[in-house]
Image: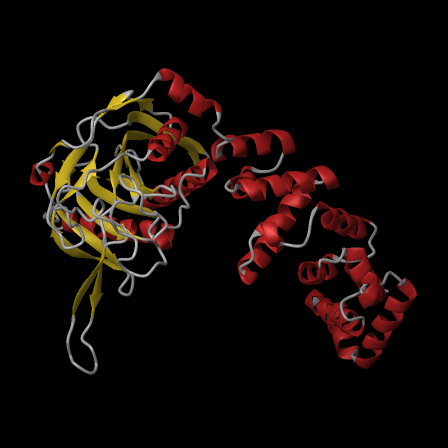
Length: 481
């Protein structure tokens, strides 16, 4: 029996207007390389850092949302290492006394309550970015370039305890953390843009023999899906090694998207390799209880709180509440539709399927969708009155979004009202029976599946507008008479 042990180190880029220790703008993702830099963030001699107050506020927000103990007095330190994208030769971080520690994030996993402890949250600045180029087709030259725009962008690093016991659990934790940071409005959570980056540590325990493997770190995972895939690959790789009586190296690996496997980067650094020492250019950060309390009072409803409230107030299943509650705008829209229609489950179904499909297909955010609760109210009424079928309703939905028109107006304009005329349906079925007596004979000999042929004939002739329930009832009655 093998037990999986996973701990995560997550870097969240804070959505401040300026960098952590200088006045350069912090939203640097799509800017031209090396255009948002200054003597402070590039480490020029004599340049001194000044702490951005918003960075502190955002770090405290995250710490409160993750149930951490706030250290009213914290300190800054230098993490020393050489790399071309780190011009100072060190990173300003919080090593000895972080701003927060000893928290947790709770969620449900496979129906059970799960709690992942947060060891610490600390503030630090980001490094730059290396861009590696393959050999040029003309000159044959290859090399690496450095973009220092990201130097000094503010981060919080969230370090968990090794409480995660499966790759799927790691992905769900990351998704909930992303949703929490977004709800706080302190981080965009866009992994593909580097705003949220995850390093995962994994080891395997052979419980029968009481042996534990070496711990492996997997870095540079840039999507929630790949967090799960990379850890699944490592789990299998480590178990195979243990089964042969060997062990894996204690090293840092990276996820190779093209090969769908992890590959070795380097041996794992020890903490003493970084030669941490107090940052001499920044005084200790001193907070007050009143400051922390003011921030706490302004915290918004968090995703897990919202999920529990949606289940309690609207009686929708946990899965629905989790999908809707992950996003504040989506949740608010659902509540408006549920109250307008007095049909929370139907509202949940249509929003999770048709609305989210259109949002993803069109790449249009919810706030720019030209439909509101009134569209859903009328749509549900048309369905309840059997003026349209579910099939027609699903055809109407993209038209509502394209035009912004109400569904009853579209039904009238396009002649989409459901056909409930039983005599008309009977005539179509009888003609189909006359033209295919072989299918009638097969049905009456016990091949009930051929009934679909006659239902299809009616739907084809009415262009899908016939009442499906009425069609099925009439087809069955005529075939069995």
